[in-house]
Length: 115
Length: 109
Image 1 (cartoon, rainbow over the protein chains, first blue to last red):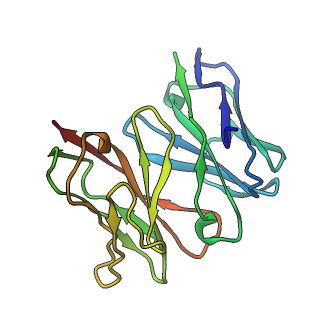
Image 2 (tube, rainbow over the protein chains, first blue to last red):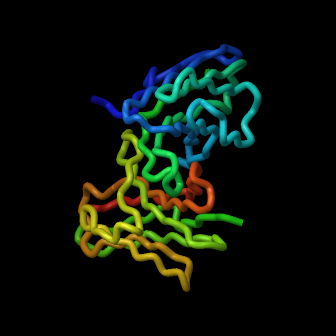
């Protein structure tokens, strides 16, 4: 009955590889987000989708591409991984139409390590 | 510009002592303020929001529009309060929260 789930939980890969992280929410929310949390625990919004439409696209390298097949899923694909991509990536969801998306519900995070 | 400032990266207090985590914001309208908490190796979760005006796990936070602050307080800290705490603001956009940099709270036994 997990509300927001992400897979994988851990991802260790070599520089230059391409990888994907999947996110699913069963809360019926309209809006989903991807955040990056760096080693200093700074939380940065990357993307947001509302009903499968991209609404927030912060300054993120083109190597990062989100995909939302339906409003319950928001996947993150990363091409040509670099050392600086190592971080914890959080998916979140909220119900649109309320302030700030209302309460945002977070996934458990995916710890990406690029070697 | 919309901004949330948490001036302390790290706050360390003894168990039983009062705790205050500072949050200041910059916003031209009437924002909604939140505190989120992240326990070790766990997901972020909402702790409280100013419109609820409730106490969660002994924590309270009052929105002070004059000082543009939303400090988080607890009169007697417990070891299980050790965590990262994030202050966040929502404004005109329905979709985005503006996040502070976070404060790591350590409660010493």
